[in-house]
Image (cartoon, rainbow, N blue to C red; front, side, top):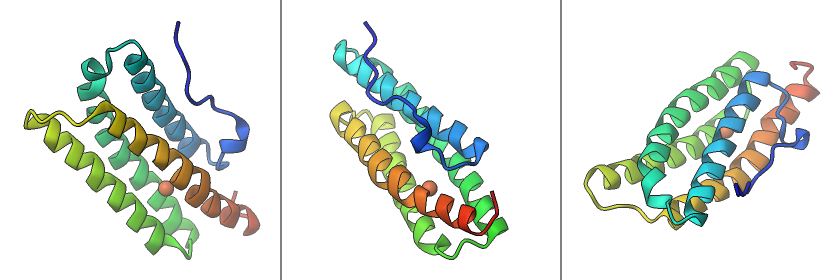
Amino acid sequence: MRVTLINWNDSFSVNVAELDDQHKTLIGLINDLNDAMRQGKGRDVLGRILNDLSVYTATHFRAEERYFALYKYPDTFNHRLEHMAFARKVADCNDAFANGSMPLTTEVLKLLSDWWRHHILESDRQYSQFFRENGLI
Ligand SMILES: [Fe+2]
């Protein structure tokens, strides 16, 4: 039976459909990894998850930062630092995987769940609130 770690609900929304869709993609990756791990197959899906994650970070961060530029978001600098730090960690995991030193699936899952909790549910909410307060969305 498939076990879902995170279920999307509307309280997660940043009120920009393009960005919400991308956040849903990330939830999908977290749930896929968690589900595979519970079946003892985490290592089988890790390569695919890490590859999808690097595509995700490149596409999604570019999209968010385009909105920041468009709407002159004042906290862009700090937000971008968080993006860069996460993208670096994802790149490190991909490098390790490519070199045959498999990152632990539990560590990757923790990286993603921490990112979900601390970045998407905190930092991303701040830009959403700024966009809303300024009548931009
Ligand atoms: Fe972000």
